[in-house]
Image (cartoon, rainbow, N blue to C red; front, side, top):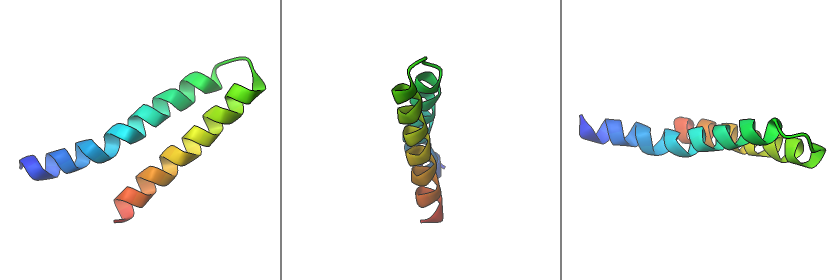
Length: 54
């Protein structure tokens, strides 16, 4: 049971970290930070879909 648990934790930890960073930067007032938050969000979604498809 340990191996599947760690497999899921190690793949979702970067995803959740990037989602948190994206939501924080999207809430800032500057347009550049909002764009950076959108880019981080897209990278997070790409990461998650790539890992899940493997």
